[in-house]
Image 1 (spheres, rainbow, N blue to C red):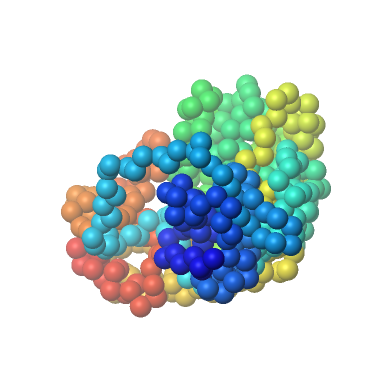
Image 2: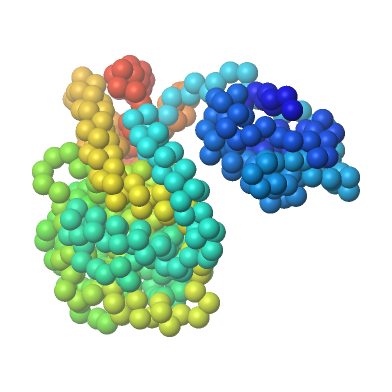
Length: 455
């Protein structure tokens, strides 16, 4: 037969596009019953794509009954007279004619241009070629053993976390794993940092769990204010979210002592971006200092790989691990096994740590450029939390409210009070400057544009 010529683009996975084009041709009668399709080799050469892409598309078409194969002969169009083509959508899709040029300085922004996408694609191909039959089956409820082993090794060497593979649980997000914790600790009253994660508050509100907030200062959460207000404390000790404060050594000891005094007390250590520290030695995780099995450690790959990967992990202390093992109707793992396989290979080959080291240098440079641009306004502002992460806090001195000014500008930016549950007056004229998504060459211009309006 003639070769198939299709306008493949970069807007979707190539195998999905090829599958859809061939399927549409079969349904429209352009490809007829018993017509032979091009070989995988010839079609891949004709379309300048890999044979793997063609093979996956053909396999999906065969699985759905649109084509059939003859061993050592090739693929042929199936008889599908009973299959009706779906009506065309009468609503046209209108894509925006212009790109949104709104400047963004939010916490969520990150820089992915230097990510090793080619290597990641190789691991993805391997996941669908080498282990495809195994990975189609249901996996371990706690996540792939090989991935948990790599996480354990990484946490021990980089964060000083002591655990076994069995203590690790994989999930799709911090929120999902936190929801699991509310099932393991059903009668708890939770204490959250103020300011802190809005998503954690939302989980507790949705699960109808009581919580209170504890203020944060330059040394992190004020442990002396905890008293007996609750029994589970959620903290971000290495880089407080969003102020950037580091929990001081004295308060770390005080917090661990509080947890050790009562069998029902636990600390949830959220270590979401501890990899990106630019000054001083790396801080040891609270979990590694804990001798009473009272710290629940959790983190995510959103910053260390990329946000859309949707993969996080939890390290349960042994008493809670036993409670988890006895839990009826355990939630199933929500991360696809293929993605777990890909991340496992990424870590086993050392590429994960190489990527972190590469991104740490990139973000450190961006931080330096941002601070250099702000130095011109040092008499009018205060800066805090600038030694780690991809954002810091800027306070504009004076009594004029800067929020209306920011709202009128074409810049996406968050105010610190947006992350506070109470005592919002302490956040007056403080905003969060996220630099992670800005190109180096644009940082000075963007910050200058912002600060000229505010000071």
